[in-house]
Length: 119
Image 1 (cartoon, rainbow, N blue to C red):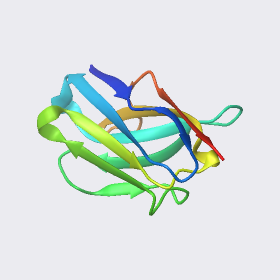
Image 2: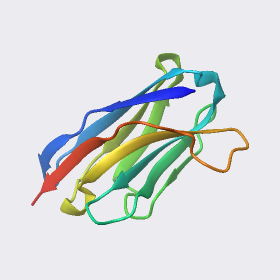
Image 3: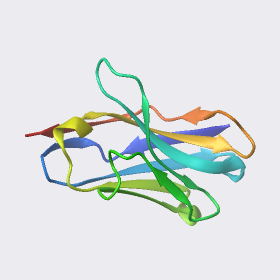
Image 4: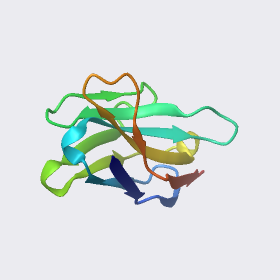
């Protein structure tokens, strides 16, 4: 079991930046991919970005390409989501999640951190 704890959320103005962190503990050797999802009120949870834990390959939703950067520090067991040029439509609860190798689903989830962007 992998336990995930997010931090770094907050309230900012449009155009500002935030960096989210996701600290992984437990069976971190089983992590193949770490991802960030978000869920806005009344909307479904959506994929934002993901990165392969032992490689540098990353993936982004079209809505955040060029503004958000996903990264990781394997030694610290921590993933990051750098969010630049934030927009009001980025307002959501952001969740960290991990996927095991060959798995079809995301198996561990954090509790989420609120990001609010005002215009």
